[in-house]
Length: 139
Ligand SMILES: [Zn+2]
Image (cartoon, rainbow, N blue to C red):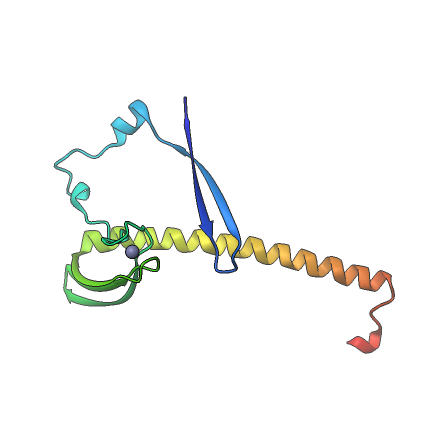
């Protein structure tokens, strides 16, 4: 049986979005699991807060240390923990992909809400037009 998971996200507007997703499981998951000696399996998860286990830690500042290392100043929005550490290029790239995915999801949601708001505005505009509430002098 496939297993459904839910995740609630609260947007800055206060609107709560509930995501449903299907968890990979059984043989499929085993096949995709990284072998223990895969370097990717050892990558630190920069987005995980060491204080409260939140997965929303975001970068505040970053500096290139050398060709393969970055110093990141990070902050947890949930408990206000702040930290700074040097991460390998692989770790930063993984984190960057994750941040981009999160940004894409937020932008999509924002666009959807914007469309809803515009539809609402348009509806009110049309109603006002029908009621002769809008005159050429309004423009
Ligand atoms: Zn935290």
